[in-house]
Image (tube, rainbow, N blue to C red):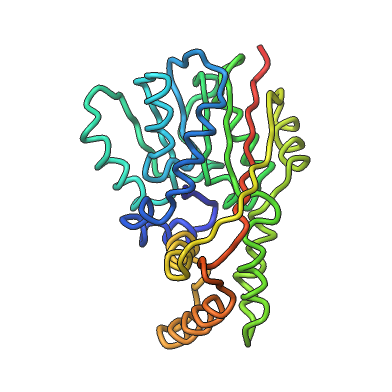
Length: 267
């Protein structure tokens, strides 16, 4: 999903919004697993933070039948894609806000559920983001988060490290976005929430090189800020060549790690 405190991130996601769902099929599957893990049995209303194109909202609606939905995302382009989906969901009452997680125009203690699927890792101030997400949650309400887990895609990180010259802004992003179970526990507990479950899902994926690189271009294009078109073409050629070299007969093999968390606001 897409949301951040930095304009360049939201601009990057807006630019690639029409290609987003096609590039992140594993995230879409993961969002369903996140929603399936929520205790329920029902939620009268829900806030989706970093709602992006709305695939997590749709998974939530499909499971719980909730009709009152609020979505917040910093990328206007992603919200436009969400609105297109909503045209096919006439029974929903949906309010969408283009806003940063730390400045969400939503009421305190209002929502029975707050979800954040594949957006939390892009928030630079993660502890503050957890507090901001807990604020609109009702006492007794549930929060569900899915984000990038520690150690994800270290194979691609190695490629970026070894090409010449290395790509520091891409390499540094791994440490910015990835978190482990103990770190998420601290964020949620410091936000005043009771942890119901936190777990890590680690898988080995093998996909065609171009499929992998297409996903990276879609979800991380903002990391190319400052490059000229010529520099971008040269960098892309180097990364493509190095990834092809690292690939095997079954495609490029990489570690796909997702961190999941379910927490509750005490009554």
